[in-house]
Image (cartoon, helix red, strand yellow):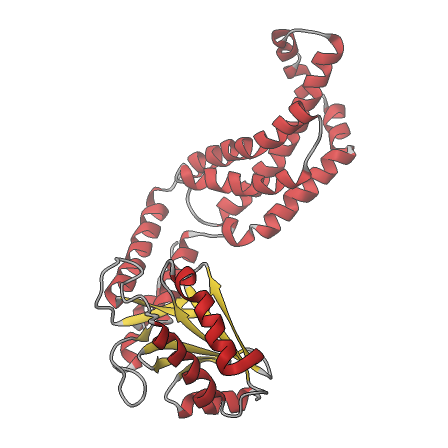
Length: 342
């Protein structure tokens, strides 16, 4: 089955294409996501409740094997959904003999999908939004409230966020991020470079915690103070070794700090040190791995909330086209997408 055949199959059964490989609609009373998973595979995903894996996994596996042999398998995700994978090569009519058959197996096992809103926890949901591979029920009013809340928070941060407090938070966060590495150096006499990955995240968290203005200054300061934190760690190590070598007291060691801080040759030596270079490289790895977090701004939060709202599909008792309402009613107003934080 190619993508064109997959699309034709889904549309002929009343499912709505939400992407070129994903379709969603009501089938057998379930809000079902059918996804193209390759030339010989289609997946069927449903939202699941906590504890469903323990309750249904073993029996579902047995029933799938009984019905499809090795042509079907199931996987349960911690995000709250179950997915059944079907081999289209071995199932002639993959929808009627595969998708609906898999749903019938779940229904016969007593499997039910959550009907409470993932935002407020109450029932009576009128739409659903993506959650992992499945869609989960939610109230449109809750989604609109999330967008309004994100906008209000962004506007408040734009008006009252402080670069000074943010910088202080980024510095203190970097210090906290450096502490695990400092302890391993002192206790184990070893440098675990993987620990340096957490420094940018800690610096960014400090910036947010002290209410820094959430724009790209947060990213720049998080990176700057992460690098500064590594320098200060290496400086502290140098100070420790000097104090240990000359067997001087802590107060005497601290008296050396001003002279050492003002010594450009010492900073140059630190910059050339092989261990320092490795630490900086792993800070860079941490920045790369955590980019999605440390590059977040207030505008990003608003766009994410609007993106969730725009991805919503109607949810309720299905009509012949598979939906209870006009899908256009579930798209955000045009004014929602023009919001900017200055």
